Image (cartoon, rainbow, N blue to C red; front, side, top):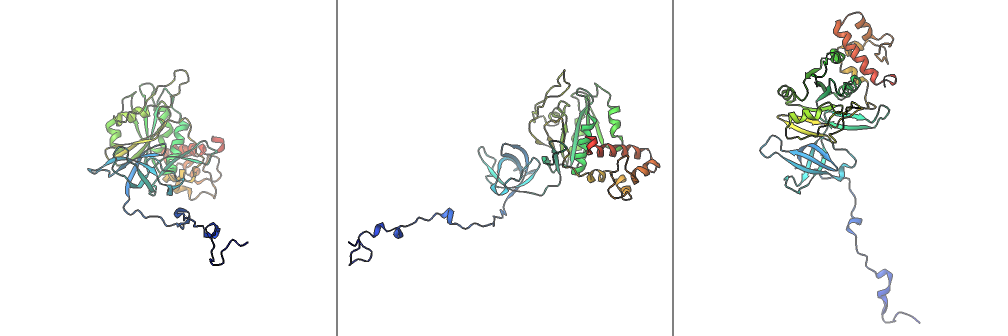
Length: 346
């Protein structure tokens, strides 16, 4: 028996034929993929001042009557690319800054500098601290906690590697004379400020910050956040005390945040007790000693420039007195900084 009627090609039951089933199109699945992305020609430039769990605080329209803080999120196009404090970014979306508004970061502009550290000296994976800083304010206590020359050396290495100018701020000088400690850095010509406990030369430091982005670093308990609060009264950064038993400071700042001071910026970072340098290029250290680097062109290939380096032109020139007493001090500083990156100096 035929299911089809001789007088009807499709038949009475043609509605059950699979070939007649209409498939609804899926516009998302059928849309061809493209690598072409919008240019966002009207994107606005902003400066990231804080990062908190996928939300970014950004200043836009700086130094105008319309300047304001907005909240942004990272666009999908950026993928795993990190956005950090100090980045200059391109933004689209809701840029009003109103409560509940949210914009998108679609691009990160080229970075001028990048301050980084690793978990330890054997770890080449870098942790970005801040972008586009051109000064590093190294805060050290003369006592309570005791100053750590090696940690300051590490800060200096990281600064020289990133092309950032270091500045020293010695706190709590009423507890200990810092002269002996500062002698370790006499050959570097580093600008230095000294202050008594909770009494800073705010006027001089503020003037030095103008027109610069300055990242403040320091061991926990040295008074770094106290200094930031003195420079920026509205910052309200948490401050802590030094443990009377261990002599160590307690971590109080848990995030990296930048604050504007006139035409400059101060970036407060969490206090650290270690500063890994697994990512550092040792050649950048010598470049920071321009007078010694000029002599190094006569060194043999692969010269480490350390005290035991054979035929090192720098060691021979300083030993011959060609650079005077200051040359001896600078070479001592170079040796110490380079040894920081060597296995026996770790």
